[in-house]
Length: 161
Image 1: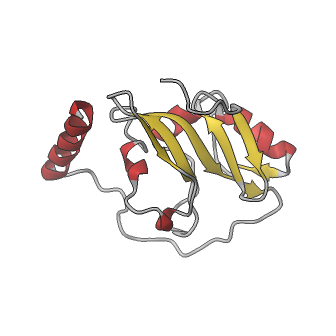
Image 2: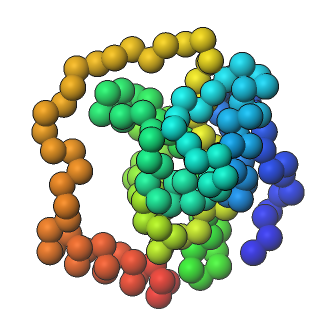
Image 3: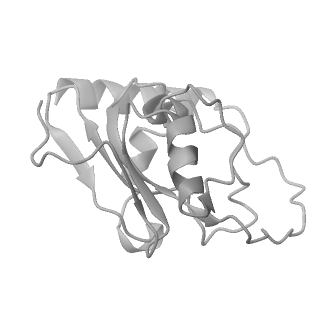
């Protein structure tokens, strides 16, 4: 599908602290553009990995979300559903947008949707991220049998829609 509006592949919004990028833009390109405006992704990245792959494979190297639940990596995104329809979640604070539809994309290895664009959070280069207390609970336990079945059911439903 073609985008509704032809937009640049990568833009930096210094007011909202967001980089808007097409899914095929590399993480290195985003970091370089951010640096040119005195911002950074503040992430450990593979320079040649696309934004779509970075998000679809779990965004390894990101800041621990459990340390600052008000912060977020992705403020909005666009993705193509298996039916060809475009899903758009406009950039907004995560808690302000209802169900977390990004869960259909994040870490799902392109199985449910294909990310075509995302608004990713930037940080001022000189800003320090404050350390917080370490969590001692297991934050990412393996899925149980019922959870795996539920994920498979959701995946089938999206593909059949």
